[in-house]
Amino acid sequence: MAIIPSDNWPLCATILCAGGSGKRMGGLSPKQFEPLGDDGLPPLVTALWALAELPMDSVVITHPAGQRERVEELLAPVPGSARRIFVTGGDTRQASVLNGLEALPRSTDAVFIHDAARPFASPELYRTLMARLLEQPELGGVVPCLAIVDTVKHHADKLLLGTMPRDGLALVQTPQLFPFGLILELHRHAAEHGIEVTDDAALLEERAGDAAKPRVGTVEGAQWNLKITRPADRVIASALLKGELVARWTRI
Image (tube, rainbow, N blue to C red; front, side):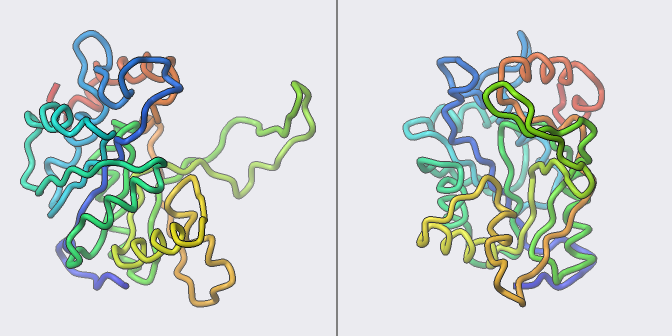
């Protein structure tokens, strides 16, 4: 399914994945629900703020089982005209995304898939992704990437085994943008055949033998679009929330 370029966005939706348990954080509450700092907002709330000024038709929020009322209460103060659809997440992120895709109207043209654990994806990043897809509608998706600046090593058993060349390598972030029909088809296929991936763009890579498979485009990611995975990430995120860069779209 290709998106026809136009001066306006196509019928667009976002899936916010907030169904994880946050076990690596070591807390009792899922990390996406815990405020950042003493007076900060939970990551899920901050992630939704970025969508308030964008022309979204629908926003799907995947949440842990039994947490719908809590999620609705958390998100109630966040403005936005998009219809909010609350969906129970699956056993994995991949299953949660498929649940979210299945909940969207079939009239949807394009869908952003984003992790609530990345609360600082800016409205500009969403616009940049959409601009690339509208510019090249033959693409099967667009993802934000960052160049690797650290040296990358193979290691095992606390011993170095060798150095990997950094040329051609990148760190991939979310949100990732896809034509809706294509990514729904790929997620259904993966679920049926037991294909497991760590990000949604990898589902297009699984079609390596398909000569007609669409390519995935890239745009420059953002250094502040960090993923809150470990306790130290929360310290960094709390500091970011106090700065003007993030505050201008989270209204803090």
